[in-house]
Length: 404
Image 1 (cartoon, rainbow, N blue to C red):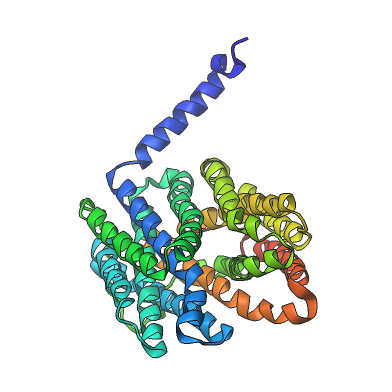
Image 2: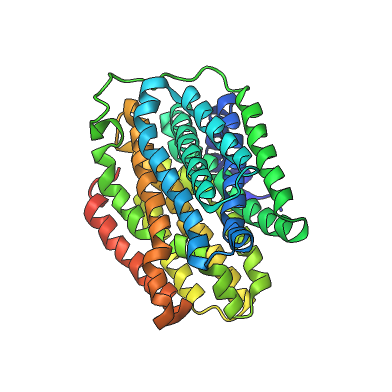
C-alpha cells in the first residue's frame, strides 16, 4: 500500500519547505564553520576528559588540584567569550576565528613543553581562551550566514557538530589514552588543531558584523542586556549538565556500570542528532515555547531517571532523555538569544548566552559536588532534577511573555 503522505499536498509542501531551507543553509561558509566547530570541540573534550587523570599521574597531585586544571580551562573559555563580543563587532568574524584557532593551536603545541604545574595552568588557560574566542566566532558567523527565517533549523544543524564532538571526544580520549598513552593523544590534539587551520583557508567573504565603535570599557560592547534575562535560565539549567560531565564516571563505577558509562554520551549525541533538525523547524514555525517547556521537563526527567539508575538500560535511557531535552535547550536557546536583538548585535547575543551557559556548567560540579558526601551521587542528581523543574518557573517569569 503506498504511503498516504505521498498524495497529501500539505505533506509535500512541508517536505519541499524543508529541502528549500536545507539548501539555503548548507552552503560553503556554513559547512566550513560547522566542520571547524566539530573538530575544535572534539579537541576540547579530548583534553577535558583525560586531563585530570594525566595530571594526577604525571605530577602526583591531589584530585582537587588535578580538577583545577579543568576549571582553569573553563575560566579561560569564559574570558575568551566575554572579550570576543566587542572584537567580533570591531574586526569581523573571520579575523577573530583565525586568532582563536592560532592561539588554541599554539597552546596545544605548548603541551609538549609543559614540565610543571604552573606552566600547565598557563597552557590550560590559553587553550580555554582560544576555544572561547573561536567558539564564539563560529556561533556568530553562523548567525549571519543563515537566513533569519531559518535560524532555528540552521542553528540546530550547526550545534549538531558539538553533539558529534561530545560523542567522539570522550570516546577517543579515553580509548587512546588507555591503549596508546597520553603522548599519542597529544599528537592527535595537535593534528586536529592544524586540520582546523587548514579548513579555515576555505572560508570565503562573510557578511559584515561591524557596528559603530563603542568605548572598550563599556559593558554594552561585550554583552547584550536584552539577552541576560533569558540567559539566567541557562545559568540555572546548565549546572546539571556540568555535574553529569564531571561525576558520571564515578557514579557509574559506584553502580557497577563503568562499561555503560563510556557509551552514555553516544546515546546522548544520537538523540540530539535525531531531534535537533525537527526542533529547529518547530522553532522557526511556532516559536520557542513549543520546544523549551518540553525540553526543560525532559531534562528534569533525565536527571530523575539518572538518580535511580541501577542498570545499564536505565542509565542509557537517561542519556536519551538528556539528548532530547538538554541538547535542544542549548540549540533553541541560542536561536532565542539571536531573536532578541538586531542583526548588528548577533555577536554580543551569542557571547552573552554562552557566558551564562558555560558559567553554569563550570560552577555546577563545584557547588553541587558538596552534596555528594551527605546525599551521594543519586541524591545530588535528584536535587538537580528539582532545580531544573524550578527553572521552568524562572523561564516563565523572565521570558514567558516575550516569546513569538
